[in-house]
Length: 225
Image (cartoon, rainbow, N blue to C red):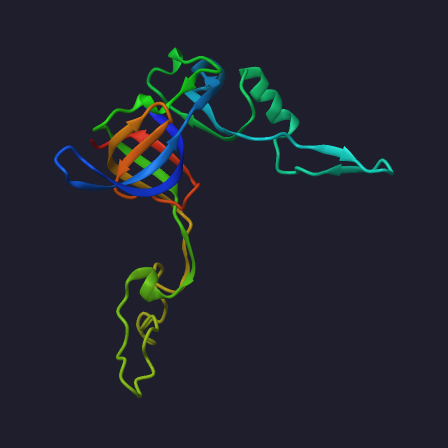
């Protein structure tokens, strides 16, 4: 892998190509990402580049009139994390990920990775956490068929037979049943970069990208292009 970046999903829109063909695109705020650590074979057993994305505040600690300790921003960066970012010479970041670049030795801490590493026509793989659908039935979750909708059937949207009583006398593993749907890691391969706005660090990707708005998306060069 030679190119990768972290991005947040802004939303979808549509553009026109020079021939006037309408193209649905997903707009991503890609970078800037900053190198926070270089993993080497000698120190870590493998070669990789650790990058940070989106600034994050530190934990705010204050005291009341009685001198009791209060933590207001409890979700901020703690002291060990703050020291890690200060060592790299970058501000505190919300997201930290590793990329196993082929040329990892060419990077240095505090180096900036921007959207212009990609160009129009590049093929990429987008990875994100899909939208959560909550608890859903077998028809929506697995696309199973419904029962008769006529009066008196009493079987409309049930999941159907689970297994015969005497043989095999059990329910096989993997049987489609109601349950939690969505909110899992999804990768969509071979998406096309339609346009790159290097000034604003925007990537316009043809088609849909998994995840809701403002979610974290990992963009990598396609492995099957």
